[in-house]
Image (spheres, rainbow, N blue to C red):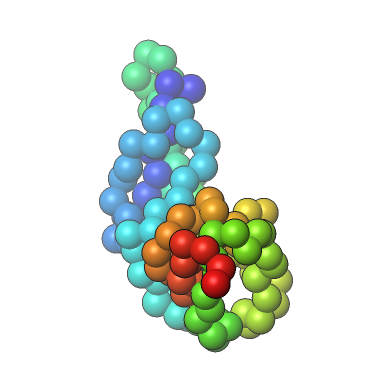
Length: 130
């Protein structure tokens, strides 16, 4: 395939959450510019384009319902703390994502860099341990 396009919305094929977006040759995406409503059902739809510019029929995902969950309290880490496991979010079994997150459940302060990072929880990374 030459490229893929995706959209996301509240019904199959809809783009009311994320309008059609050129994803290049990427077969996955992360979009952090949207805010999901707890309890709302969402769908992702994909169209492929071949080298001749012909588009496939749209294919939509199964429904996904957004949930609101309490997270662990904010935390602080230092660059030299090393990688540590994130725990305490409810419901269990979810994954964390974002800067400094590894394998969906570990936080690497050095990879995140100094400053505030907001994941499902907020972690402040300080330059060094004192």
